[in-house]
Length: 415
Image (cartoon, rainbow, N blue to C red):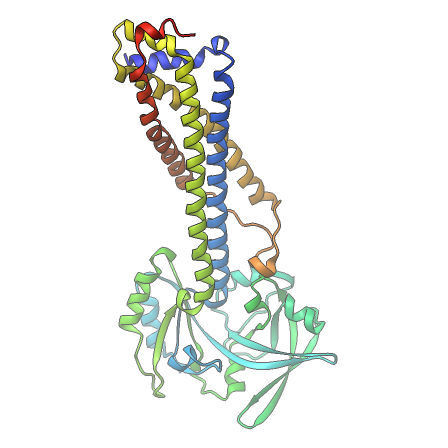
């Protein structure tokens, strides 16, 4: 039988015999552990939610990996590239690729009777993954995009619609300047989307695949590039390496150089901002562990001083210092365990409330989302609990050596 564990369980369960001094100390220690683990769970869940929410929105506009003309990486004007069927087949055969589709792009001006606005037109076809657009649709419907027909359907953002006073069903003129002439086309607004990603919402419209090709004067087999979604985002660099070795630096039949870039390379400012969140998380985790550790040290010292007579009796009966220390460390484990249970209920409960009801709202102009996104990762929660328990017990080892200085004879006369 584990004698220290048995004695610790008896002491912890004897609620009616606890002196008034230890009760507040134990409550404070339990509350400190509970608040610490709850804050850690909420912090990690919010950061995971932010990173994945923003990442998915950026990927919805620009995919995980892009294959494009070398000139498009440095110039704002879309440069054409020829992606043959054989090259497209090779791209889809690369390990880790989930989906790939061609796209086109053109720059133009949307004009109404009252205002005008410069925008980018992105041409997509029926093979394009429109789940992201459908998920963020706020009015109307997603057009049936085509790689063969030019129906001049248009999907615009809420920001563009508000600036130009557009609504679903409106007809709007678009003007395209190139080759020393101006081309006018009339589009029909079929749907309005909203992602709160300002740098995309304020400029990007979606239309049929062939329209930018005609307006740019490109050949029928040219496009702006290929957008690729990977199966496992955590392995995106590994998949990108295959693109670098097999696709990049190839030359198409028009003499244009093909390159590839990841979402990190295409939007470095966004992911640099997200990486700063990791630093904040570590700071909060360290502070919460320190709070939990200090409250447990204070509580343990108070409990040891209160149980001085008991310690003296145990020593007089022949119990070694190490066994007495283990008894109080087990006692601390019970306190930490209760704090962890309370903290998990509080932290997970608040995360689930935010996840289902969106209680906390944010300014989308600054945070790209209108409610605080949260993502509950059970493995991370378990790891936080184990780490908190181990660290909290570890910092109590040194204070527990106070027991070694308690003399049995003097302690039994201690009041």
